[in-house]
Structures are given as C-alpha cells and as structure tokens.
Length: 394
Image 1 (cartoon, rainbow, N blue to C red):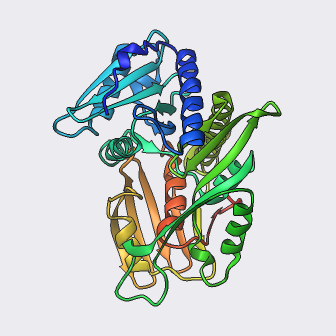
Image 2: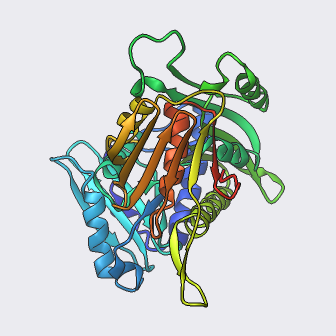
Image 3: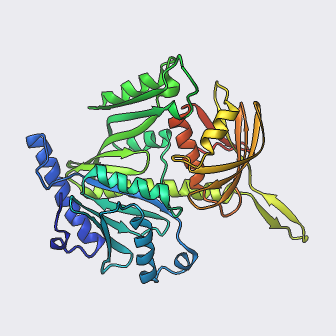
C-alpha cells in the first residue's frame, strides 16, 4: 500500500502526536463497528530502539547534517534491492521522517532522536509485517542498532499499569535441540480477552509440567487517562520494545511509552555504572578493581556446556555474540566474546550451574538484558541474574 506522506506535512512531534491521535481513534472505531480496518487505515505502531551513536555525534547534538547521514546509513541497510530510502529532517531538531519506498509499498517511520539520544522512539502506521522485517534486518546488519529487550517480569509490571487484556507466550528451544526430545521444545500462544486472562497466565506459569516454558513475550493492557473511562489506550507490547495501540487517547500511550523507556534506561545504566569492571586510582596512588561479575543462574536444571557455548556464541541473532573459546570441556568453558551490537568485548565462563559474564568498562549494558531475555525465550524460563555482591539484577 502506498500513501502520499507529503499531504500530512508533519514537522514537529506535537503535530505527529495529533495525527496519531486521530489515526488511533479512527482505527479503533473501525475495528469496533466493522471488525476490520478500512483500506488506508492501520494501527499505530511505536518502537524503542537502542542506538550507539558515533563519538562525533554523542559529543554534540547540534550536528544535524551528520546525524541525518548516520540515519541514512543505518536504516538504509535494511532496504532490499528495489527500494529507496529517503530521510527528511523536520523543523523540530532531532525529528525525522523516513520513507522506504518501492513499487509495491511505502513504509513511513517517524524518528524522535532528541528526547533521548541513546534510546530513540519510532512511530508508524505502515503495514506491520514489512516494517518489522525492515527493522529486524537493520538489527542483524548494523552494529550501531539494537532493540530493547523486555524480560518477562518487566512485562508483567508494565501490564499492571492498566487492566490486563491478554498475553502472548513465546518459547523456542529448537536452536539448542540435539536429537529427539521427550519434552516440549516449542510453545507459542496468544490469548486476548478480559481480566480473567491474567488468571489463566498465572495458572500456566505455576504448572509444574511446563512452567519453565511459559515465557511471556507480549502483554495487552487497557490503560485509562486521568480517571476518565472514555479516554483510554489499548496497548500490545512485545518484548523487543514494539507497541501496537488502539483506543481513544494517544497521550495515555505516550505516558506508557515514556515510562517503559525511562525504567529500561535506568536498569541498563545501573548495570553499566555498578557492575562493569574498571580500574580506579586510590587516594594513596594505587589502583583497585571496581565492579562485579554478573552470573546467570539456572534454577533446577543444568546447562549443557558445549552445546550452550556453541549456539549462544555463534554470532547469530538473537544473542549477537561471537565467542572465541580458549578452554573447553564437558564441565566448563572460557571464552572471549565480541558483542556484535557495539563491538564491545566481554569474558564468559560457562559451567553446568552458572554462566558468568565480565562486563568491561564502556561495554553496553543492553547486552546483559539481551542475554537474559533470550536465554528465557530460547533455552529455559527459569534463570536468575545475580552479581558477586549478591544483588539481583532483574
């Protein structure tokens, strides 16, 4: 589907939000009355991205020409051979419209790079499937770009901001499967409805037969604005930081989006500031090592060291970690690892009862959230994360 974006003439975030408010209400009305969307109507999508800016951009947010070039380089990597990307800088600083156009379709993504120079927000009403493919391709090919990784307990907390209206589960062990298995290796389901969906989720999570495979990947919540029952946002939030929203009040959605970004950033910066290893000079002229190792602890099961090492550290998505093993046997492995998101280097020690990660100074804390979230989705839902000082990180 092709839409003439020029007729919108959106130049500021305020104008965008007014447009999305109208679009959200129209889409909700059509879904409610006709149980389908009209031809040129689509649900509002919002995203949170983690972006590693080059030094010359992170030092100064006023270099708009260079930032526009950076956006063209990063987001242009996700296009296919017959599509063309144009990036338009808007009147408001740090606000851009991206148009990925081909003969078949046009994808429009609005980028807010100013309100948070590390965790950008994206907004679109374009078709979801090609939009997701575009962004996933960027994540696979560009070291500067990553999704945010919302672990299941965080999704549960976000849903409590409103009324529960459903959930999605996503567990897929096939990346680690080795021959025939007597247990379930793939569990995916979605259930939408009323508040009773929360009760069903809790029953599944407590079932001893497969609770290690009940891994929350999406939540739906109905959140009201300013105690007005007529003003609300019905929001689906996926664990890679993608919202799909309908309802009557876009500002309620913006409040949730801002909350998620703020809380996520606090967690990531806390990991970097508290647990990353760094040498610090003492007042007596010596040096001490600060920071703590981060331990991923399996609860009630053992890790297959060789298989885990091979398949987590193979450089592929979703972990994006490339490992070089220096010592390995059936009960332990030691590896130096490159995070393909930022190029940062980490050290891993893997044992049947423990995975220890040493995060050097200036290494991205988003890596820890990515490891933790995807260990649950692709290996086992029963992991805890602790530091040497006894802190639980998540």
